[in-house]
Length: 362
Image 1 (cartoon, rainbow, N blue to C red):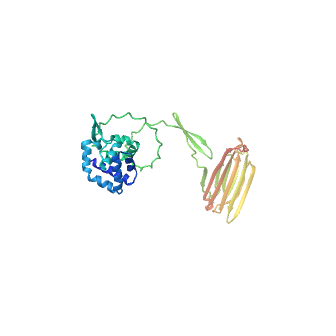
Image 2 (image 1 turned 45 degrees about the horizontal axis):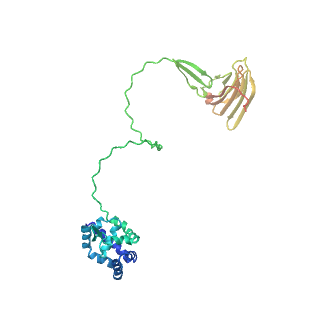
Image 3 (image 1 turned 90 degrees about the horizontal axis):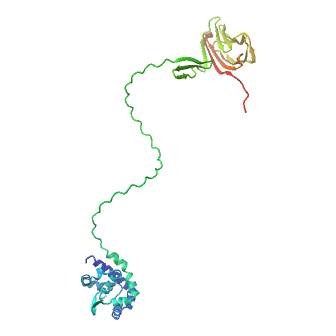
């Protein structure tokens, strides 16, 4: 009963507002019986807006609620449009729609039941405007029931497609170096390899190792140039340097100079050569010598005087043709002589060896 009282109050407020707005309640009353039309005219004449409409019903609210709830059950049993109509009729002192007022033979008839049906669509339309608000107000929340038993787990769904691989994370810090393990047992001695010379030229020297099914050829074991470090300060000192099919000779000529000459290794096999010599001595003296497509069949002087007291920078470039294969080889010779020939440094670097010169292809 207590939870129903606020609902009745809200319904009365809604009914009072409609009267104060001046329209729907009086229009609905206009189609009712004579007693209702008199009550409606009486209400219009005596009520001022929504204030008097609420004051009078509130005074008799307890008695009306008790009669409605305990004698007739009109409020709790009403549905839809019946509930709002009962509240308005009780507020204006009229009998409830379901209240028994007389008997017709053996049938009990509720007062105004006929009138409601006679009123037709007007009263029905008016009651529907208040229907939704009252249904919300009459809803009472019951106690929450106990939680049910958890159902069986369903079958897992199909596995989704693999997502795109994310970016690689940053490299972590290097861990501490572990302790060195114990040395393993010594293995059996391997087979002694067979060593042979695979290549031996002024430009390269390579060895070949073979052991069982394994074999290896070393890279070039020679430096790209050949050096001579000699003392030619003694009288008649001579240094002979082989240059493939030629022989290069350094010979002491005086206490302060040397002589450089060239000759074929085999006197019976002349050698075709290209030679360019450039020397700088003293302050600024430059001396050159050129031999282009010259044939060397005997000893030829390349420089008759080479100073031996750090006075001269000496450079020669010699290209020669093998008399048998007709292939060409070229080297560069740099000389620096000091202390009357006591410290002679001669360096020979080969840039070509057994090559041919062919026209370029398109």
